[in-house]
Length: 114
Length: 276
Figure 1 (cartoon, chains in turn purple, orange):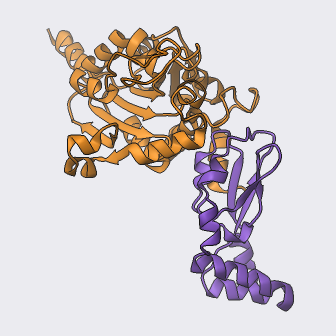
Figure 2 (cartoon, rainbow over the protein chains, first blue to last red; figure 1 turned 90 degrees about the vertical axis):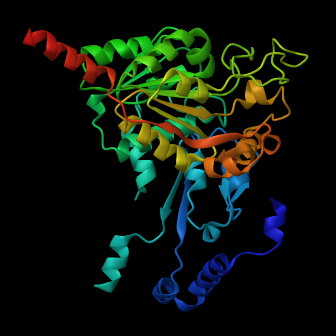
Figure 3 (tube, rainbow over the protein chains, first blue to last red; figure 1 turned 135 degrees about the vertical axis):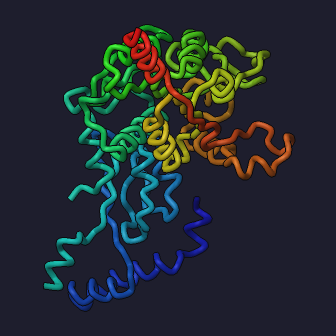
């Protein structure tokens, strides 16, 4: 797993990280618009700790190493912008403890265009 | 806003039951449950039109967590109870969840005869290659040479293939999936439930607690990786020689035939009898 981390991210991942970096400097909306033009999708990862049993499937199989591990062995979201939304973790979580959702919903996008 | 996958499964779960569920951390049963719920949602079946029956074992706990009509029956007899339900109320969709020992050892006869009769049922067999709940005794599907609590020097019997048994017994739809290939499992389950005839879906699942720890695969991640490496699609398997296959197994739809099911035949007989 650590090999992947060192060998560098794909184009998509880098773009996501870059855009969020700019977001801090140039305000919220322009960064988002720029991101949408480039076709980058960002995702939110929510872990429901009450149901998580720390099996480690999500941490081991995440293609982008989004999750780290805390002392209890449960996943911690470390690199939320790297997530490509494959939903492997959400589909394979035996305890239904992970939810992946797109960070900016369709409603919010429509609101902005209006 | 909760995304669709999560919304769907929480719609079908019984939240008044004790969650998190009783299965071990990383157990494949939870993955199968999620997959089953997605398949049912895909077919847009009503909760009241569904029956989920189960036998005894870890898999037998599954009906407790879903909000359908559910039945937790005696060991190996999930299919017999399901047969009764189907004959009494043919309009219901009846599913059975069984473990490998439950379906093929204790309920072996019921299984082959339900397949032969071609009742419109769906048998979901979770194959973890061992008796997990009772302490890791070998089951009919434990591979040759594997270790179990009752086979400490390696298993000397040969495993049989549930899918091939079902094909031979005459099931209309037979498929095999794994808990790693979960998107494929969704479609296999949906196809099996939609099939008008006896459908068997064998799901290779991980029991790292009882099977894995005795066979150098002590955690769910290693076992999932094993399924990833050993599950071969049918097209690929055709090109591979027996030596290359080795421990590997084919996944996907293995048999799909159209023939009148038991209820259709039974109705035909009823009509004939009424004419005389």
